[in-house]
Amino acid sequence: MLTTFVNKVAESGIVTLNLEDYYPKEEVIVFNLKDYLFMGLILKEKDFREALKILDTEIYSNKIVALTCSADAVIPRWAYMLVASLLQPIAKEIIYGTEPFAKEKVLLRNIEQINTAMYNEARLVIKGCGELPIGESAYVAITQKLRPVAKSIMYGEPCSTVPVYKKKAPITHISSDSI
Image 1 (tube, rainbow, N blue to C red):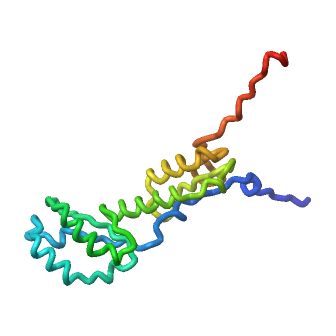
Image 2 (image 1 turned 135 degrees about the horizontal axis):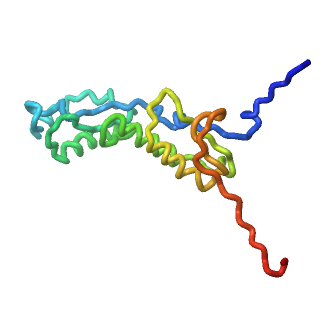
Image 3 (image 1 turned 90 degrees about the horizontal axis):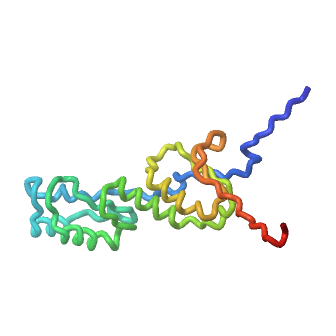
Protein backbone atom coordinates (compact mmCIF):
# COMPACT_ATOMS: atom_id res chain seq x y z
CA MET A 1 0.00 0.00 0.00
CA LEU A 2 1.38 3.37 -1.06
CA THR A 3 1.05 6.18 1.49
CA THR A 4 1.18 9.76 0.28
CA PHE A 5 2.22 12.41 2.72
CA VAL A 6 0.65 15.81 2.26
CA ASN A 7 2.40 18.89 3.56
CA LYS A 8 -0.59 20.77 4.91
CA VAL A 9 1.56 23.72 5.97
CA ALA A 10 2.84 24.20 2.42
CA GLU A 11 -0.68 23.92 0.99
CA SER A 12 -2.20 26.32 3.54
CA GLY A 13 -1.06 29.48 1.76
CA ILE A 14 0.58 30.77 4.91
CA VAL A 15 3.29 33.37 4.32
CA THR A 16 6.16 33.38 6.80
CA LEU A 17 7.78 36.70 7.58
CA ASN A 18 11.20 36.62 9.22
CA LEU A 19 12.07 39.90 10.94
CA GLU A 20 15.76 39.00 10.65
CA ASP A 21 15.40 39.87 6.95
CA TYR A 22 14.86 43.50 8.02
CA TYR A 23 17.70 43.61 10.55
CA PRO A 24 20.47 46.09 9.62
CA LYS A 25 23.00 44.54 7.24
CA GLU A 26 25.45 47.42 7.69
CA GLU A 27 28.05 47.37 10.42
CA VAL A 28 27.27 49.53 13.45
CA ILE A 29 30.31 51.09 15.08
CA VAL A 30 30.23 52.95 18.40
CA PHE A 31 31.70 56.39 18.97
CA ASN A 32 31.89 56.61 22.76
CA LEU A 33 32.56 60.04 24.24
CA LYS A 34 33.77 58.46 27.48
CA ASP A 35 37.10 57.91 25.73
CA TYR A 36 37.55 61.70 25.57
CA LEU A 37 36.75 62.60 29.17
CA PHE A 38 39.35 64.22 31.39
CA MET A 39 39.80 62.00 34.47
CA GLY A 40 36.67 60.15 33.35
CA LEU A 41 34.53 63.07 34.48
CA ILE A 42 34.50 66.10 32.21
CA LEU A 43 34.97 67.00 28.59
CA LYS A 44 37.46 69.77 27.94
CA GLU A 45 36.51 71.57 24.74
CA LYS A 46 40.04 72.42 23.59
CA ASP A 47 41.36 68.88 24.20
CA PHE A 48 38.29 67.34 22.58
CA ARG A 49 38.62 69.47 19.46
CA GLU A 50 42.31 68.54 19.17
CA ALA A 51 41.50 64.85 19.55
CA LEU A 52 38.87 65.06 16.82
CA LYS A 53 41.39 66.69 14.47
CA ILE A 54 43.66 63.64 14.63
CA LEU A 55 40.87 61.03 14.72
CA ASP A 56 41.12 58.30 12.08
CA THR A 57 37.68 58.80 10.55
CA GLU A 58 38.18 56.08 7.93
CA ILE A 59 36.95 53.43 10.39
CA TYR A 60 33.52 55.13 10.29
CA SER A 61 33.32 55.19 6.49
CA ASN A 62 29.93 53.94 5.20
CA LYS A 63 29.01 52.56 8.61
CA ILE A 64 26.18 53.31 10.97
CA VAL A 65 27.65 55.19 13.92
CA ALA A 66 26.08 54.83 17.36
CA LEU A 67 27.05 58.05 19.11
CA THR A 68 26.95 57.66 22.89
CA CYS A 69 28.67 58.21 26.21
CA SER A 70 28.73 55.20 28.50
CA ALA A 71 30.28 57.10 31.41
CA ASP A 72 28.19 58.74 34.09
CA ALA A 73 29.19 62.25 33.08
CA VAL A 74 27.46 65.40 31.95
CA ILE A 75 28.27 65.83 28.29
CA PRO A 76 27.51 69.17 26.69
CA ARG A 77 25.22 68.94 23.67
CA TRP A 78 27.74 70.69 21.45
CA ALA A 79 30.08 67.69 21.88
CA TYR A 80 27.58 65.41 20.14
CA MET A 81 27.12 68.08 17.49
CA LEU A 82 30.88 68.26 16.85
CA VAL A 83 31.11 64.50 16.35
CA ALA A 84 28.04 64.47 14.10
CA SER A 85 29.49 67.33 12.05
CA LEU A 86 32.81 65.50 11.67
CA LEU A 87 31.34 62.10 10.76
CA GLN A 88 28.30 63.10 8.70
CA PRO A 89 30.12 63.25 5.34
CA ILE A 90 31.82 59.90 6.05
CA ALA A 91 29.36 57.68 7.90
CA LYS A 92 26.30 56.13 6.31
CA GLU A 93 24.22 57.32 9.27
CA ILE A 94 24.74 58.68 12.78
CA ILE A 95 22.31 57.66 15.50
CA TYR A 96 22.43 59.01 19.03
CA GLY A 97 22.37 56.03 21.38
CA THR A 98 23.94 52.67 22.07
CA GLU A 99 24.74 50.04 19.46
CA PRO A 100 21.61 47.96 20.27
CA PHE A 101 19.47 51.11 20.10
CA ALA A 102 20.93 52.04 16.69
CA LYS A 103 20.26 48.54 15.33
CA GLU A 104 16.70 48.65 16.67
CA LYS A 105 16.09 52.05 15.09
CA VAL A 106 17.26 50.83 11.68
CA LEU A 107 15.22 47.62 12.04
CA LEU A 108 12.06 49.61 12.85
CA ARG A 109 12.68 51.92 9.90
CA ASN A 110 13.11 48.91 7.60
CA ILE A 111 9.83 47.45 8.87
CA GLU A 112 8.09 50.79 8.27
CA GLN A 113 9.24 50.70 4.64
CA ILE A 114 7.62 47.31 3.91
CA ASN A 115 5.23 47.43 0.97
CA THR A 116 2.03 46.06 2.51
CA ALA A 117 0.32 45.48 -0.86
CA MET A 118 2.03 42.09 -1.21
CA TYR A 119 0.44 40.99 2.09
CA ASN A 120 -3.12 42.00 1.26
CA GLU A 121 -5.52 39.33 2.59
CA ALA A 122 -2.53 37.09 3.39
CA ARG A 123 -2.34 34.59 6.22
CA LEU A 124 0.90 35.60 7.91
CA VAL A 125 3.20 33.95 10.40
CA ILE A 126 5.74 36.24 12.02
CA LYS A 127 8.72 34.00 12.74
CA GLY A 128 9.54 33.99 16.42
CA CYS A 129 12.95 32.38 16.83
CA GLY A 130 16.23 33.18 15.20
CA GLU A 131 19.85 34.05 15.53
CA LEU A 132 19.58 37.83 15.83
CA PRO A 133 18.32 39.85 18.82
CA ILE A 134 14.93 41.02 17.59
CA GLY A 135 13.20 43.02 20.33
CA GLU A 136 9.56 43.33 21.21
CA SER A 137 9.31 46.73 19.52
CA ALA A 138 9.83 45.08 16.13
CA TYR A 139 6.98 42.62 16.76
CA VAL A 140 4.70 45.49 17.78
CA ALA A 141 5.72 47.46 14.67
CA ILE A 142 5.15 44.58 12.24
CA THR A 143 1.75 43.88 13.78
CA GLN A 144 0.70 47.50 13.42
CA LYS A 145 2.05 47.64 9.88
CA LEU A 146 0.32 44.48 8.61
CA ARG A 147 -2.91 44.26 10.62
CA PRO A 148 -4.81 46.64 8.31
CA VAL A 149 -4.14 44.42 5.26
CA ALA A 150 -3.64 40.87 6.52
CA LYS A 151 -6.33 38.22 6.71
CA SER A 152 -4.63 36.80 9.78
CA ILE A 153 -1.43 37.22 11.75
CA MET A 154 0.18 34.48 13.79
CA TYR A 155 3.41 34.24 15.75
CA GLY A 156 5.82 31.32 15.76
CA GLU A 157 6.45 28.72 13.08
CA PRO A 158 3.90 27.56 10.47
CA CYS A 159 3.60 24.16 12.18
CA SER A 160 3.06 25.69 15.63
CA THR A 161 1.60 29.17 15.83
CA VAL A 162 -0.04 31.48 18.32
CA PRO A 163 -2.97 33.38 16.76
CA VAL A 164 -2.55 37.15 17.09
CA TYR A 165 -5.17 38.60 14.75
CA LYS A 166 -7.91 37.32 12.49
CA LYS A 167 -9.98 39.57 10.28
CA LYS A 168 -13.66 39.21 11.03
CA ALA A 169 -16.03 38.51 8.17
CA PRO A 170 -18.02 41.56 7.18
CA ILE A 171 -21.51 41.75 8.68
CA THR A 172 -24.20 41.61 6.05
CA HIS A 173 -27.42 43.42 6.82
CA ILE A 174 -30.76 41.94 5.98
CA SER A 175 -33.16 44.55 4.78
CA SER A 176 -36.73 44.59 6.05
CA ASP A 177 -37.91 44.19 2.43
CA SER A 178 -36.47 40.67 2.20
CA ILE A 179 -38.29 39.40 5.31
